[in-house]
Length: 267
Ligand SMILES: Nc1ncnc2c1ncn2[C@@H]1O[C@H](COP(=O)(O)OP(=O)(O)OP(=O)(O)O)[C@@H](O)[C@H]1O
Image (cartoon, rainbow, N blue to C red; front, side):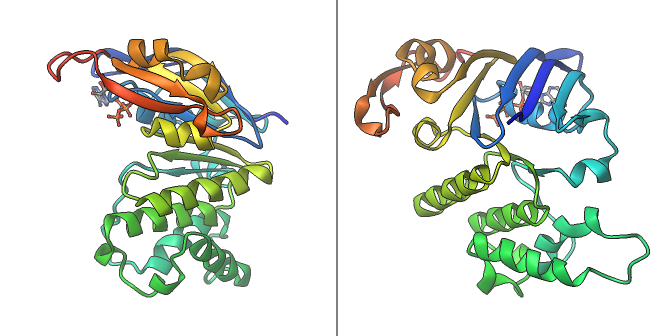
C-alpha cells in the first residue's frame, strides 16, 4: 500500500535554506520515525508536508499534493500534533478533542453530529483521558495536555498522522502506550510519522526511519540499517555501540559519550 511520498522538498526561512532536496517515502501501514539532532529540520519538515510553511517540491498522499490542498479538505485525511500546542481559550478537555471533528462538520449544521460524540469519547479513551473530559485544558500537566492533543488528532480519524515529538512530556509508561497506540493505528493501514529524539524508542517502535542532518536526508530504512555507530557519530556526534538486546532484530543503543563538548555542535 502506498503512503506518503515526498519529492525534492525545500524550505528557505529568514534567507537561509532549512530543508534541501528532501526525498523519502513513509509507507502506509507503518510507523516512520523522523530523527536528527536539534535544528536538523524535523519540525520544519512536518509543517512543510502540510503546507504550513512555504515549500518547494511535493508531498503526495492518497492522490493529493498535500501542501496545495485546501486546509479543511486536507484536515479530513491528515492530522498533525504540534510540538507544543496551546489553546488560548478556556476549553475543556472534551472540547479540545472535539476540535478534531470540525473539518467534518457542515457550516449549516446546528452542532456536532451524534456520531462525533462517540468518536471524541473513543479518542479520549484511547489516550487514557476519559476521566479528565470535564477538566479545563489549561489546568492539565504537560503530559496530560500532550495526550489531549493526540486525542484531538485521533478524533480526526486521519489516514495520515504526523506528530512532532509527541512523547516529549510523557512518562515512560505513557511513551510505550503511545507507541503501541500508533502501531495499532498503523495496523489499520494508516500512515504514521513522528519526530522522535529517543533513538531507542525509535528503534523499538518504528518500522522505518528517516534521518535528517542539516536539512537533508542522510539515511532512511529499517532501524537496524539506519542506526549504525557510524551514523550516530557523523549525525549526532556521539560514540555508541549497538547491542542485539533490542529483540526482533531491533538494535539497542548504548551511548559511550559525546565526541565533543557542548560548544561544538556537529550539525
Ligand atoms: N522562522 C525561521 N527563521 C529562521 N530560521 C528558522 C526559522 N524556523 C526555524 N528555523 C531554523 O531552522 C532550523 C530547523 O529548525 P527545526 O525546528 O525544524 O528543527 P528540529 O529538527 O525540529 O529541531 P529540535 O530537535 O530542536 O526540535 C533551525 O536551525 C532553526 O533555527
